[in-house]
Length: 157
Image (tube, rainbow, N blue to C red):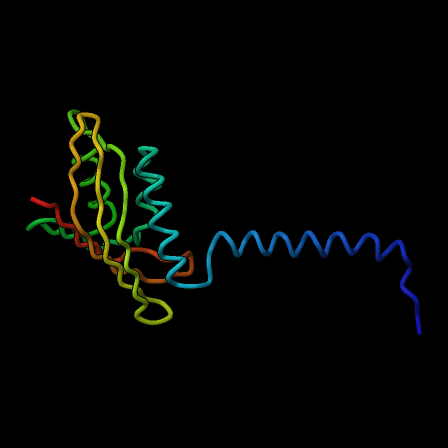
């Protein structure tokens, strides 16, 4: 039986440990559980909104002309049109993004690559107003992660 030199073990062991840690960190950034992965997308979106970073917020949406967004009686089709709608409504002169909070999230998996989400949203604006409402989302898993492919948002009256 051939002996492995001690020096080689001393070099390879830390590399193996570093590899395991890196793998664990990577898996922590993209949970394998669909419900946890979808919830993570929503938390990332909420954080991006609260930094007033609409482009990062929109990273949670499917970047496709087939994305659909329903709000009130209006339908918006496509990622770019949805971004433009958010800019006009919240990031244009005379408007503000405020602080966004999602709550009451109920995530249902529809299979290994699809999920349905129900929840509530609330904005807190600098004037003390708190517009709020409910949403339903359909998520699909793509090679680059879970993305919203359909958003139906309502505003409370």
